[in-house]
Length: 188
Image 1 (cartoon, rainbow, N blue to C red):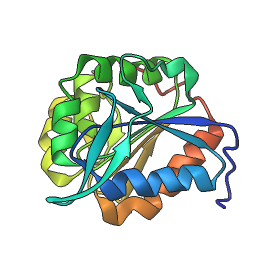
Image 2 (image 1 turned 120 degrees about the horizontal axis):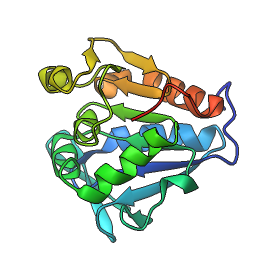
Image 3 (image 1 turned 60 degrees about the vertical axis):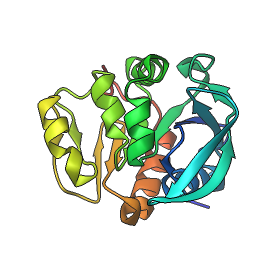
Image 4 (image 1 turned 120 degrees about the vertical axis):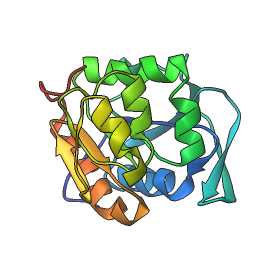
């Protein structure tokens, strides 16, 4: 059990095929361990294919589609990484809209590895402090973010990390930000 309880808080995980599996399963477990209720949201219903690097991993059941899901029903959003996952999500209009709504409602958002690509498309990064997988640094800077190479960066409810090695720090800050709730500075 983490030091921060998020009992009863609902957390949406937005992803699609090609997700880096551990970047889904590790934060998902951290949310559950802290008393939260995770929900898997994706562009399409059915099952999603997880990956361990370039190798196929497990499949995961989708709870709701991004078109059906409403940010008002959740306390926070998690965007796992994985190149293929992030590249497909970033062009999905429902995923963009769903993500933007969390910023408009000042709710915590946590994104790791390639996940921040979606934040660029959602138009929510101007002036924000972030990190990501190193190959996204130029993209994020061009989108107006202040990028730095750190294990975890927290900016008023926005939590970002670089890669699976950062998951312990990412999960800890994710749960902490959810327990703190809304942040006035967390805005689109």
